Length: 114
Length: 113
Image (cartoon, rainbow over all chains, first blue to last red):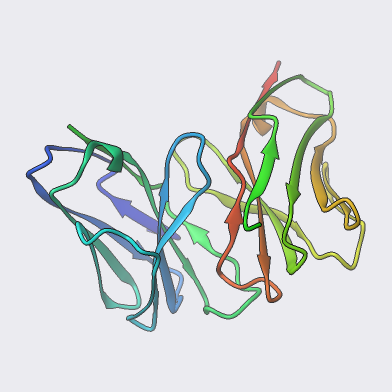
């Protein structure tokens, strides 16, 4: 595997379910990100991790819970979601948080909340 | 003031034609303007980027034109090919390209064979 991988690629869950999204980067990067991509809306930055430590939470509801056990893996734990949470969730990584380092995106997990 | 407005929402171009996508911003503190390309089933990938000290940057068939006074920048795809069919996002950031990008809403480009 190369680059940034995400699993599962598609997920359908009910509002009372608990599920997790997984992201793995094979680039040796130190910073990882979660984004939400909704149709006809700009990409929304959700969480940022640098060397496993969370550095940013963009006022994301607590039903989304990130976890970063090491610099290569990032999880997004989901529970009690709402239909408006249906979207494409993208993971990205970069060499560092400082300016000028390109972010490499994974293919995303298409989430549908029923 | 934090928004980046992108147009058009969708664009259909004949093979060999020129595709033009426009973005406008308000915040004069923005100093880094990347464009991302996203194919179906893939994540966005950096295509080309510009800083406001130049008015144009060209990489192959892709050119960014930047108008600082009008606070606008645009992506031109010359000799558009069916393989260019994708969604294109403009973005802006301040402090010389931090990770905090403000993204446009995207333009879905279809190039007809």
